[in-house]
Image (cartoon, rainbow, N blue to C red; front, side, top):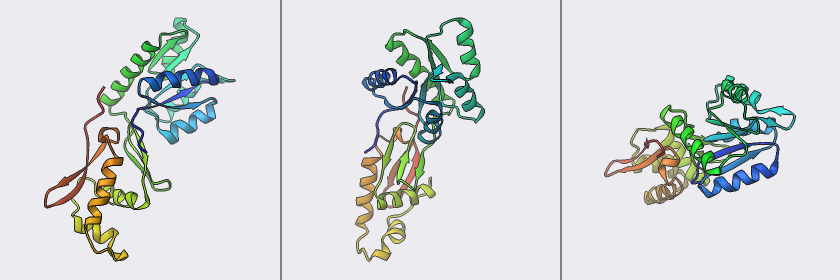
Length: 230
């Protein structure tokens, strides 16, 4: 099933804090991923490609600041908001110098946290830093800037074919010949049925970054869609 909310990675060694943040963010329409150790956070950044992250300055025995510095050195540009009980100017400066996009001191108003998070998401989209759509053949999963969905084997094969010809129009006959002829399927209507399945699973299109369009009397084409709304 497709996720319809932006994905936020929460990195904190305190499960109570990550749970509270996850519950609060869910009320604002976000899907959350939690990590309680630096190694786990590194894996989540690289594999889940969150739309943004909230990282505590102290993660158990490790430093959230060093994690941010390492991620930036690797070229990971995910918007990161640092969270800390340390509120002195020099503490904020160190976090921002490491590559964090914003810094909030505890205690904080949750509405302010969400507002600052949305500001960083908008900046990332304007800068073209939102994750690009990606297809994972191993799991038959489609990852978009703000959603993921797992497809059936045939749905994934159809999308993969269209994906490899992005911007090109493929006729119904083309798709049928490449994916169904060997099975002895007699009707090209099977193409329309599976196109319908894909459209339902890849909605809303803005969450996936591309749109499957039908061109009358010509065929089907995958095209990019406009950025997510702020």
